[in-house]
Image 1 (tube, rainbow, N blue to C red):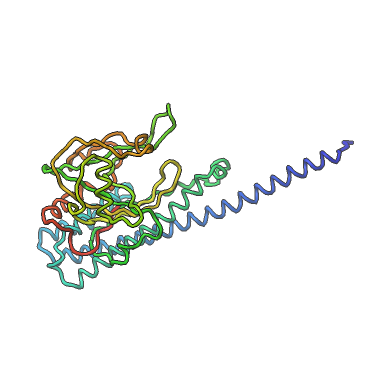
Image 2: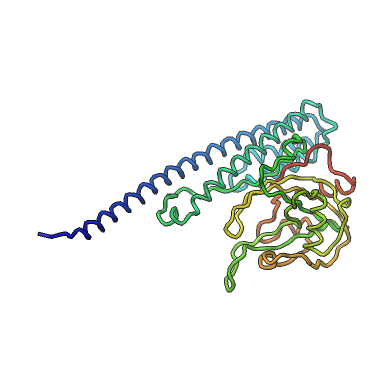
Length: 344
């Protein structure tokens, strides 16, 4: 008969205890993941409902504007509502741009209020959904969860990038940051209509090849107490070498709520987009930080058509569709009336 020593019994007891602790943690984590996935599903349903209402409002507006414009707006609403999932963002962004092109002064006040309400509902629903996606992805990204495959076979939830282009959000929403990082970004346009974009990638250790690349506009974080236009001017100088006074910027035209990962951190930010125009120049960055030097590849002037053909995502995703409105705002020398339209 096997004679177990006290030490052996203690070791076996500790192993059993460790297994029970790991099992309990795994159960709790799996249960939390299940709740988070339910939250993602419910928030997506709420977003779908808000988008459906926006499409209905767009069709109502289409009946009140000139026939040609009305047909285009109605077609954009129908395509957005019926698009398959992998094309939904593109179609919703086109609907946003179509709504943004409406002459609000020609509409009855009741319809203007409906557009504002629909845009606000979509903005808030998208924010709630992206918050749920952020929390779920953060938990599923932990080593403990990955090692034990606690995420199961459920697909990784994804952020939703939709332009909510009405331009009539309440002022309270404009000022809202909730402690998130606030950034000022610049859509810099040359006389031919080309835009200056930055190409960058996820930082990787020396000797490794980046796998994630993207394009984005000039800009960066606003310092404490700094005005948005002053931040836009400073970032433009630091990142391109071009100096423009704060009075040169039109806007903010758009407001973007961005949740993304960068160098292992989750960045939750609010971005305000300004527009400015100047002659084309050769960028000469003078203020790139050490991290920016490791993650930024080039600055390039690109036309509206070239933006659509760039390899890798462009942020904001609907930039090409937004450029006609940007050029119109620059020509007028001011932003459209109302709070900046939220984009993503």
